[in-house]
Image (cartoon, rainbow, N blue to C red; front, side):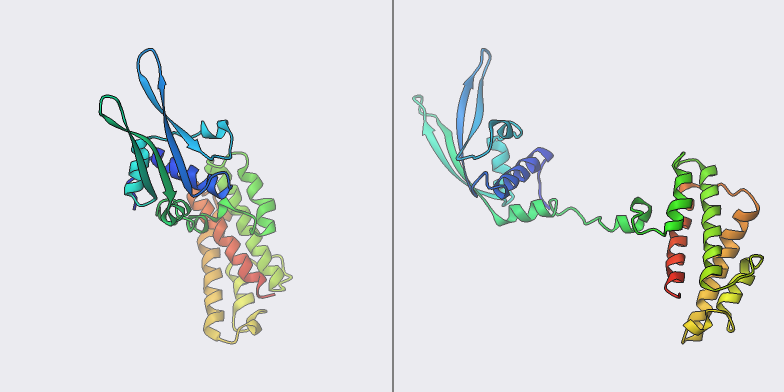
Length: 253
């Protein structure tokens, strides 16, 4: 981990970006210019051989302290030239900063921040590009009227259950529209079910039967017969799981 402030991180990000844009060399010359005001003397950084614009330079704050910290963290190497004033005091006149390989690694890994890309897989509703078309067309528009409204989630969950049941009939070639619930699941996944031939291992077929029967009994039936009004978290989890069950059924066609 790096001991850097946000401003220091912004500086090294900017330096790496400009090098990659070929507006800056990996050896950067910094010249310190004194700017005098009525009240004080300001130290301003001038960048030698910068191929960008003045506007780009104004985006970033470069200070001696920030460069020192970047050097202490091994992100840059500094060679400093001092100027001796008439008073005998030595002040930094310029420095040559060499951007180290560690700087690119730090920027590319967001300074060793933990990889949280897995979150998108835990919250798949954030990306519906791979969702079942029926779910996208029939469930998600319901939620467009208010994603925090539990009554809307109730409607979306009920619709998802109907889609799952219809898909069981379709993939399982069950023509009887009155065959529902566990009876439908048994007609599809029992030992003599319409999809029994898809399985070479009896325990896997039984596992499918138990899985779909459990979903129908635990979620589909309650939402079909009464108002459940699930929370957005519960409703979202159910719709995501139904999407997985639909894809499993499609694989058995």
